[in-house]
Length: 380
Image (cartoon, rainbow, N blue to C red; front, side, top):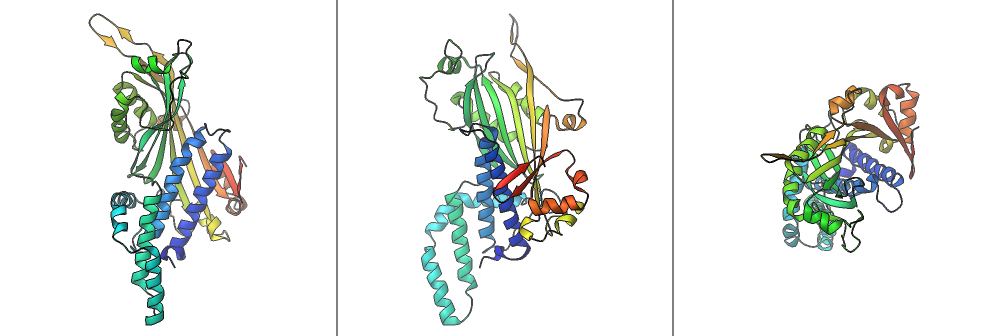
């Protein structure tokens, strides 16, 4: 039996699995047919996160070391993310040097029959093999997930190619998974000529096999990767990131930058990030329903573009004027045009929170989504 399947550790992994599965259900129900919405763009990153948790769960079977940010995000500390990334680079070589899983299971049975004892060492080897197989099998949520172009269109007013670009980062200081989605117009002459027809539509003769690894413009793809890697920290506000992008790339024009912050995650008896929430969750009868998962969507968008100025002695590239909602103190503090807070909670946990009389105080300005079975009921 896997060591992670029992006690508080098992409860934590079962709860986060249920939370991420519920989040996937919510995203699926809130994506239009054809999978072109923001929810569909988030799905690959949720899959990466699920794969990472599956790896960590197997890792505990042979290395009894796993820490989460109990008092902050409720997610694993950054060291676990780094170790997983390091093991990913050596997983295939380590697997090749190990006996096959069937051989290890046969050794386990043989040891039990001959020694009349449980073969802890063999069990640890099986857990290690399962861990390495999981790493090789699925993409994990790395400290930085490289950008890719997931959508291409043409700006209605500018007639420039517009890229939908996504990337991810696991913030070490906040121990929070972050997902970035951006709409960026490209005024590079060669790209405009290749992708946009004289009528201002996307050139149907150019095949674009989406998703494309990196920015669609190959001349800027490496620079853009480097920019995203250096400018994805949670401590940077979305408007700071968007402004830097606008300044650093003369022919790239960010029209929208969206950051999805996953967490905090609350789990009864394990996390300590909110005493009131944890106290109420501890009354939930079923441990696998005693959790609360939150996320925040932060948007900053361009309200206008300052045209480029060409002079005899100097020139100024086009620049974006980003909207910040100064009437909303929290939006101003975040550095965003708008934001939404969401909370996903199992039905039984929601009943406990509601019965406590604290639901309004706990959820405040959150949009609440209650999961029951395979369905999510929103705005309860």
